[in-house]
Amino acid sequence: MTQVEELEAKLDAVSKQIDVFYLFWAATLVFMMQMGFAMVSAGAVRRKNTTNILLKGLADACLGAILWYLFGYGFAYDRDAANVNSNHTGNAFIGNGPSNFALAGFGLHNGIANQEEDPDGADWVHFFFSVCVCCRFGHHRLGRCC
View 1 (cartoon, rainbow, N blue to C red):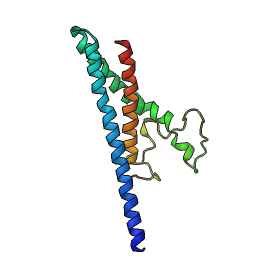
View 2 (view 1 turned 30 degrees about the horizontal axis):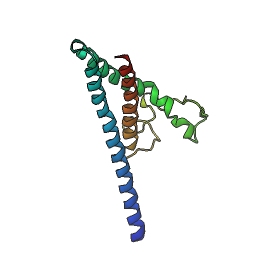
View 3 (view 1 turned 180 degrees about the vertical axis):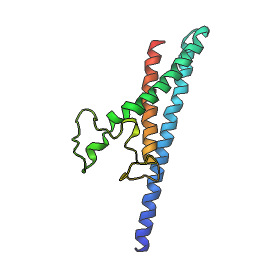
View 4 (view 1 turned 90 degrees about the vertical axis):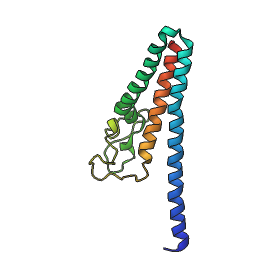
């Protein structure tokens, strides 16, 4: 391996790490929007209802994260359709393979053989970002109700 190839490999690794960091930072900002929406919702109701509306926002975030973990990620990202060794054919509208429901297809620390492990944690950061976006839309519904 020449010195140029080594530098290109290092640059590719650093570029991927920067991409993962940026996605994590964006997910954190989207998650922080929940607090902003909570403050807007609390300001839109009378004082006696503030605790109720804040608790509804927290319940939306928690329930949204659990449902996205169990069902949403599996429907949105059909990992089985990309696997050439699988007999599964992808669905053009919605994912229906068994791999990503409840994150069953993630190869990191779950004991599944023949799964590639991502040392940068890009899969987990992508999951966190998608959870944050899912919960954000649930909170928009709450804002229309208060």
